[in-house]
Length: 108
View (cartoon, rainbow, N blue to C red):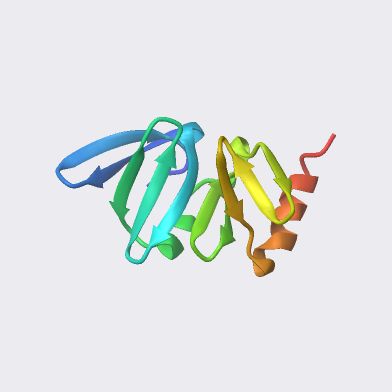
């Protein structure tokens, strides 16, 4: 995957699908697979969460052992949960400070 573009292609089953980074809300780890949740649909993709985080642009951040979020789609962060377009993700203790720092750099 290249992070210079604003999209990637993933292979899911027999289909190769184009996904725009802006559309990705979150990515959930499912063992050796991930579920990529976009604003329109979900895709199952064969790749581990650990491998995937290194290939994504900087606006993607791991916030839990099982979740990567797109900071561009965060509505708010409250009570140790990040809210993204109707999804609530618990933020793991070891990821909390990093998320708070990332959000603080974008405060007015």
